[in-house]
Image (cartoon, rainbow, N blue to C red; front, side, top):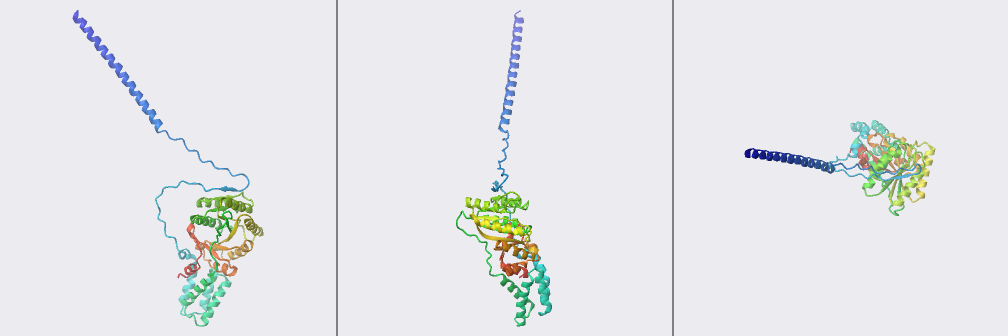
Length: 388
């Protein structure tokens, strides 16, 4: 009996131990599950992506009137510095025009003396380069006198003398872009005139960028309200150059846009306004009247018109001379920007413009990049033509 009692007691203890182990195992499972759940919630909270940043609010331009657009602020990107290639020389850029003259010059140098064929070759070469009949005749007349006087007897000396005469004809004019410092509320105004397609808007954008890099504040005026893409194109350049622009409605009054741009520059003490203008055919009387009005309005307010730059496509040749006459009468042109000179064999128009009209060529465009709009250097230009 006693042994049976001890056996039952031992079994009871075994049952109790087993029950205790089961309870402990259940508690351990519960604790582990709660810990895993807590870590999962913490991870989700810790790595939850931030809500997307709403796009910046932009002001909607009014339906009427002019609008001032500020350059968009862009966060600078950390990029590896790039090695910029050496800029091309003017001689390299004028290969097209030089090749047009090279054949004639080679023929002249290949002869032993100076004869009738020499003068024929020279005249043909100058006319093909669009130097113009009047200027060509004057240049050759001077050389003939020196040949007759036995001052020139060799072909090489003749060509050297021609180059010197051409340089002399281009010396003297003021080729500086005029900026008059003074009252900060009276900005300088540089007007740009010219027919469509000559590179006028691109020229404005390049000058704006150059002026800003030189430390001068600039504001653009989108005064060509007649051409659908003109305002958008100029706005693109304003964004690239990081300068503000004043624009109006398509088909609006160009004078009003230019006037508002000048007043805006005056209020903000921006010292220079670059004004685009309409560019339809120069034979249109109403265009010339409109340009005259723009100039008058630009000088009525706070602005001072210190430059009127006529932009001419060098590939148009003598037609550029006709353009210069018309625009000069309407707007009192102070200088010429000759674009696309790198792709033209007709750069001799420089001589016709300066000799016949007395308007200096101040800038030349010899490529697509901003650095390819450069001041016109007569000596460098002639040397490039003669491959000196």
